[in-house]
Image (cartoon, rainbow, N blue to C red; front, side, top):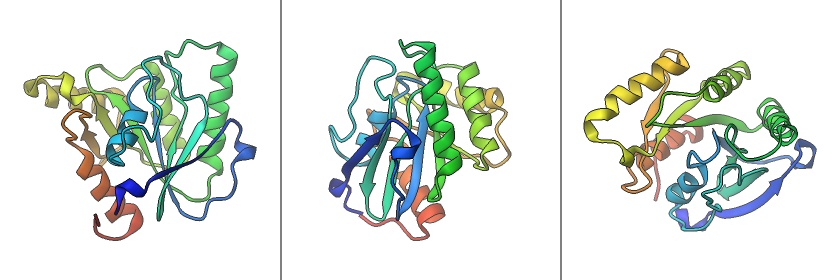
Length: 199
């Protein structure tokens, strides 16, 4: 795949605004400031395809990116955003309607900060995704913030804290070293696009 051909499509604040999609969709979910936008930029090899902010809750819409034949979907962050409870409830409904209503969604990647045990919001989101019929792939972000000796312990904490279904894939990811990037793409290619990786 030619990663540099990735492009931003549109942002939508309500599910009814989202037009029908004609390609496979892969969605990314995670708490506010867990690194979704950074991850999208890294896997697409673009510096500013997705807007990155240090302020939790920057992504308040569902954002769509196209890299044919794939559409990447960036869902609103949940949890610690400095917004009203009403706004958080609206985001929750938006995410729920998308997960339930998208006809092209093939996989959901749930981002978890590898440095910390999963929060109550992380657990709720995981259960929510499973209830919609998906077995989410877990991406453990901020890997470069840990010592190598701590990684396996924290991966185990994520598995235990979320009560992951048997066989659930957990991919440690570092935005600094790009560790995990190729594994993510190989998984998407083989499991959801049905072909080998192309560059």
